[in-house]
Every structure is written in structure tokens, then in C-alpha cells.
Amino acid sequence: MSTSTSLKQHTWLNPSPKHSHTCTPLSHSPSRSRRTGRHRRSALLAAVARREENEDIDVYIDRHGFDGLATARGYASGRLDGAVTHRSVANELDHPPLEAEIILQALEPIVAEYALTN
Image 1: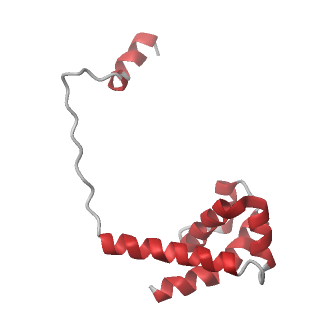
Image 2: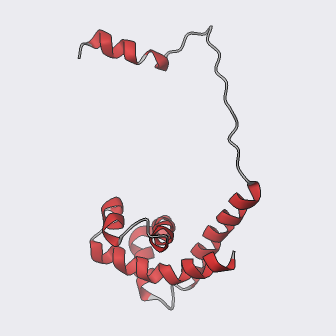
Image 3: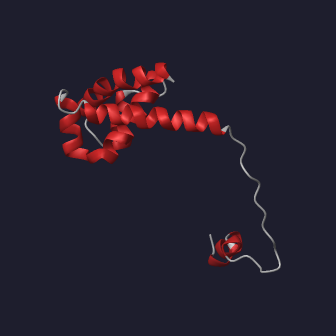
């Protein structure tokens, strides 16, 4: 591919001032998004609260921090829905498959509990 062709394809990076851009607002249900967000935060807080009684969660937080636990909580929710497996989570997070399986098993009951309450 020549440089001139590449530059022509990427002219959108430097738009002409005479072009105007408009955005269309996204439609969403505020009550649903608030409820989903509350469910996620509640499950995450419950997982952190169970850190002292669940060594697997404690070790995971020590290794990957609270951000890592929040990410794993999202994957645990996906696993309950059948969207992911421990191997796909391991690949995404660059963890050994056993570590992914252990944290998913530790988080699944928590995520399921809060999914039922909302």
C-alpha cells in the first residue's frame, strides 16, 4: 500500500472546518442502568466483605487488586449467563486457567445472590 493511499483513507483524522458533526443521543432506560450498576457494586462490595472468610478472594485481591476483582466479578456474571468459560477468562486476563477457575467459583455464589435480589 502506498503512503498516498494510506493518507487518503485517513483524512477523517483532520476534518475540514466546513464540515459539521452531529451526535445522536443514545436511548437507554435510566432505571435499568441504575439497577444494573447497583447490582454490580453490591456484588463487588459483598466479595470484598467476604475477603476475610474466603482465602481465594483474599489472595486474588492481593495479586490483582480491587480493580482486578471488579473485572473478575464481571466475568463471573458472564459465566453464570453461559457467555464465558474459565479458559476464555484466563486468556482475556492472562491468568493461568486454574486461577481463573478458582476466582470464578469463589465469585459465582455472590454474583448469583445479588442477581436474584435485583
